[in-house]
Length: 435
Image (cartoon, rainbow, N blue to C red; front, top):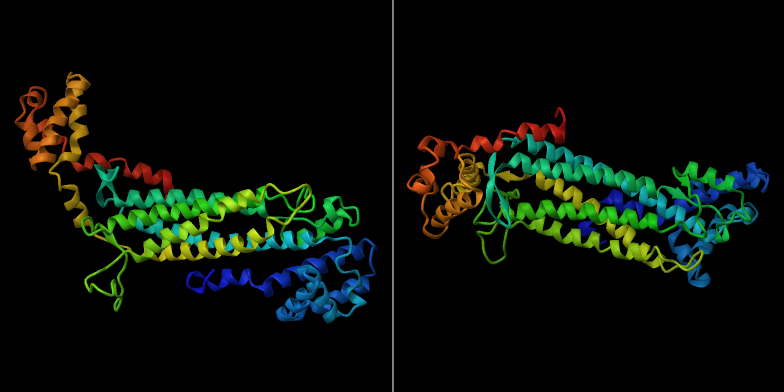
């Protein structure tokens, strides 16, 4: 991922230096376990740890790989250069490359998930704060992009909070599912290595032993992990699209914070564009781009092939780095989002009471009018508002088919905004508990 959409902590997880450090730890812990089992001399296992404070030379490893055409062998050769050939004699005893590669990938994905969970906590805190701030800020709800009935800005934020809270739970589960390791040797039978080595390495690396790993860790785990990232990205886009709509000139119920000195357009000095949420929409597409390849990686030949390898080298860093950046950016947008309550009221009143049509419909049915007839009467008056700019309440009061059933006072009552917000506290209690 390009630096423009990257944050250092997540990028560091995917650096060659971090990867080789994890490779070393896996090999060294495996040597310790082998020594405890009496398979290799303890002094050899201890000698491997001489490299603990070493800086692995990425360029040197690349130089060796150019000859060997094998990345793990290149690393092991470089490790032997650091600790000496005798000390390194038993490194990788009974192991296969996938033991190192797959276990390392899952360590990296677990660490990435931890950063993403911290990101989500910050976003959830911002959404909750804005929800409580605007719990009673009335705005029009829309269906199909058309005015429907009143809601509140707080409910909008609360809805996004609940969605992201579900996503956080999904990520916790995905983290757990990906947190397995395998040190099971060629085709995963433990023929040349004791299962106790796997248990020891996994414990040291914060993983669980994979129950059955063939020669690779099953890729359905990875498919679920990246699918979860894709869902989170879609939720980011869901929020971003709402903000983009609210910032349209014709709506202007909210807008991204526009900082001093910021420019909106190279051609038009008046512009204040929703550039951050448009960017988030694009970044969400990039994260979702990893989902299908991850699912296609599930089907591997027999006990292993490497058709998944090239895919994961790209999608693992790209998807996690991008999502980390996107979550942080969205948190900033929510924190600084400028809300315009007066514009919300003005937009809601634009069609002069039309949004109260359902209350009138229900009131007529309560008075004995058939639903079909009541719908026809209310719709007939509503169309006058749409087509001629009439006042909905006035039209109802002058329609004998309405006034025969409802008094002026009863019609007036159906235009009370408070009716639509009376259960906001109940909804907030469901979403936030005791706040």
